[in-house]
Amino acid sequence: MNEKPILVGERVVLRPITVADAAGMFEGLADEEGMRLTGTQDTFTFEQVEAFCDRISKADDRYDYAVTLKEDPGSKYIGEVVLNEVDEENRSASFRIAMQSKAVYGKGYGTESTKLILKFGFETLKLHRIELEVYDFNPRAQHVYEKVGFVKEGVRRDVLMWQGKYQSAILMSILEDDWRKIAAGHSE
Image (cartoon, rainbow, N blue to C red):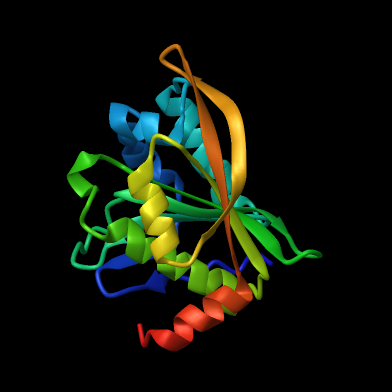
């Protein structure tokens, strides 16, 4: 299952994460807004991030991609998009995305990256279901997920304590039939 092709969009290129991406990923962990939006409470050393990048670059049960700009010949990491918890028997996976910093927020890179990884998941990996969780304090991400076809399924109440207040996680999924309808309606 470990074929990890490069995925090319109009403005972004998704390529498998390598150890060389540790610096960009570590830099992203210093972005307070990004940490809040992903509910990341732990702190990490550069060595931990480097070891994580090394481990996931070799994993054959997940698909971790660096988001890079097509116009950037250096293919610099500006975020990541992931299909993990891949269940071949039930043809399902979990999705997550994290953009590196405010400098790349709101430019459509995350939306395009999400569409590319969904296409890969449904058309190449032949998944039936892709799911995610998004915190209730992140309506911008919720909107993007709905725009690309994710459907709200429920709420996990009070799952994250953030700055003294409990936050809930919204469960969303997209099924292969949803994806086919969206793909047929768009010639992207």
